[in-house]
Length: 206
Image (tube, rainbow, N blue to C red):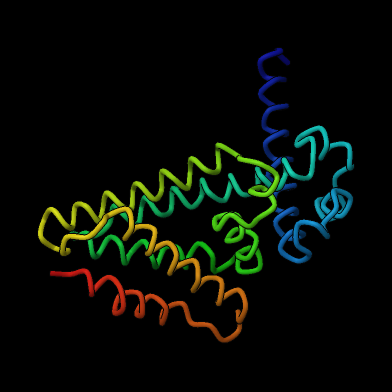
């Protein structure tokens, strides 16, 4: 076996191990919260030695951060696809709101932790700035603001502050997802989409 092939196999194993540990970490953090989740519990669920987790991530906080960064990257891909579908700015924004619900559907227990970070009250926020997360949130607000701006320039939306509209839309979707996390058996996200359309997006139309 060549050295190059051996390195490739090690890299593949490392990536597979990392993904399995992150999957286990998502379940533990979702069930117990950040503070009541231990590296040992994650290692047991993932069926890895504790030393492997420390080797790959260093600390529990680093593992938690990588979990959120992974989530943010998945969100970016899924939301970008939603925002590229639709003939008008209005349609693209509605598609985005629906895609956000689709992303969270299988992650409702994790929603509270994610929303705490996005609203600045989470573990990572309190422990100091994390540029990679902050940048993702800032870039995403800018993308939404650009779509609102397109709608304004085309005459589809009345003149408003585009960034303010983007932040407002994020706030509404986050609050609905928070309620979904609180009442997962009864909350209907499809109804939330309808309310966002009626109370906000349609009100911006000219």
